[in-house]
Amino acid sequence: MSFKAYFGGPDLPRRCLRDLLAERVAAVPAGGEIDWVTYYFRDRPLAQELLDARRRGVRVRITLDASPRTDHANNQVLAMLSGPEGLGPDLRTLHHRPLPGIRWKPHLHEKLYCFSHPTPAALVGSFNPSGDEPEEEPDIIEQILDQDRGHNFLVAINDPYLVDGLVRHARHIQQCSHGFLERFDPALNSPLCSKETTIHFWPRFQPNPFSSLLQRFGSQTRVRVAASHIKGPGVTRDFAGLAQRGASVEILAESTHRRVPLKIESSLLGAGVKLRRFVHPEGLPMHNKFVLIENETECWTLFGSCNWTSRSRWLNHEIGAITSNHGLFETFSQRWKTLVTECNVND
Image 1: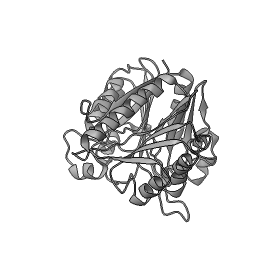
Image 2 (image 1 turned 45 degrees about the vertical axis):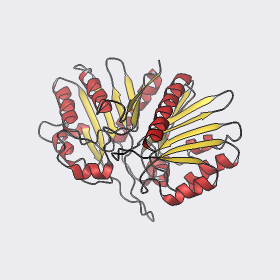
Image 3 (image 1 turned 90 degrees about the vertical axis):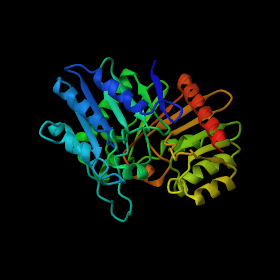
Image 4 (image 1 turned 60 degrees about the vertical axis):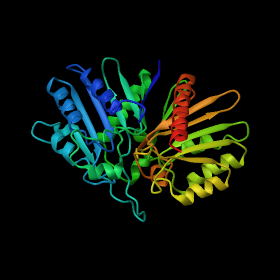
């Protein structure tokens, strides 16, 4: 089986995705390898499990964003991983300077977790281990929200060719120079293509592959979007254009206006998009980032770390997959139904 999807959310055990990563770490024996690239990492017990793996002879390479939106969020884990008993040169914090003439700073926003054992696998999705136990900085959770209880996912990819390419990508991210020219670097952004799946990387010079795919569709097409962030005129055109060409477009969006501004909501509704906000009574986030496309003969699933925002589209390091795998489509379609049911209960 090429894929297996795992979900987190209020309907599932707390920290289940975090525990999935911990189980994967524990399963790698001496002589094995672990390669992670992620945005937030605040989970100190999980960081300790990685250090324990290194002590038993596992090669552990970690690359983190040095300055995420909440600047100090990763500091405690970084102190552990960079200490005397830490990862040494196998830990990299990636600093990005603002690009000339652009007010936004690029981020390392990928969520990629690669394991050599028991069989090689790479997990890609929306979840980064941003909670802690015990939680000593609740102010951070107020800003980034409780991702251990909110809606997230990871997809385990087992196709040997794709896994090998993702591992090489993670190591190149850790080792190479970064800056404006990285969007022209084939080693960083050339796609990985298998029979039914293509994995794309950002930043890129080429057109956005998700947008290019959506432009192919119109009438007789149903498009369902679970999006934690929607910002920017290009994104609005993607979804509005679909609706105006006759596609049925449904969006479940995060509740916060910072992530999905009212102006964007109004524009999409005006174009005929059926947009609904996911509102949880405890303020838990809907952090999913997937799209389901289907017509009478075909279906596609788009998933990864990339938000529907100008920053993700043009600046960030992101991963996004496009697959026609029918089993994965059905799995995400069932999860969509869970989200809709939860919305109906919370209305």
